[in-house]
Image (cartoon, rainbow, N blue to C red; front, side):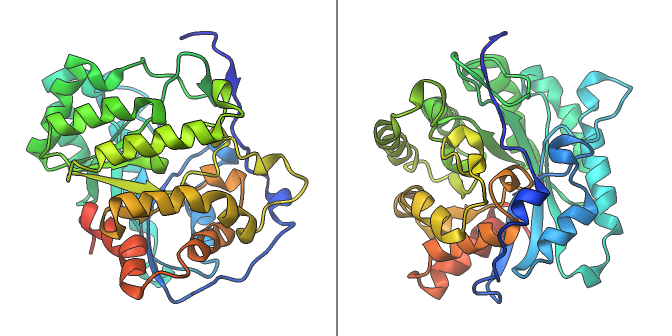
Length: 340
């Protein structure tokens, strides 16, 4: 898979984002943001102050979950334990944020462990739990790969990772530790995820970024066909009660919407018009009790600001009941990640 054409990421451009501002809609609606990152360098850097500025922009963010991104790894020691540095770093950042901030920042932490180690990965999982000060909730393994392109600058994982017997041996250990699994894969890999989740029904799984119906590479100009195939695969996987889905990530360039290429940032009305068929289809298939909105920040910040993102979601769900909104914006995430 080396030397594949690279689909560039939507870069975060603060001056571009500053061209459009919106006041928050439904500012009292309680939200858990179950998917954000931190980094020293990626996206121009996104650390404590950057995150707090977004969280304090007007929406009622009560709690967040950090999701692995290869941040703060240990620089020495055994290779299989180096990812524990990410958990150590995030737990330290969370511990420095005062309660007056108004948000339980990184109340949950999802880290990385090389499940292809098989049963030997147990040492890594135990180290994460010890390092997290009670915050560790699960593992994410980057499996998003395609034979015809590579997305961004991340090292592409091997194709068919979820089908690898050694990976599955390591995956099985998650149940013994009571940990969840975040799946970052393309719509072309949902059949393999379905097979994995069916084989291990005791491990809770969440599909990140609605399962990424692709809009780049060979899928340019194929939006209707991709949508139909993506929907069919979700209708298949929903039969597995251990699987939930995250509603977000559509600001990534790999979806092919191209808002980041315009001269000004999109409004929440424009985003809602483009994204609502995808979001509403997920809710129709999985139901609010198995769906959770996510920011995917700062990755999606390449398309819009934090206030505009949540306004987009709130426009899409404007006609839903208060109970449905509570599940979509807070309760499903709280239940899945065992948050207060």
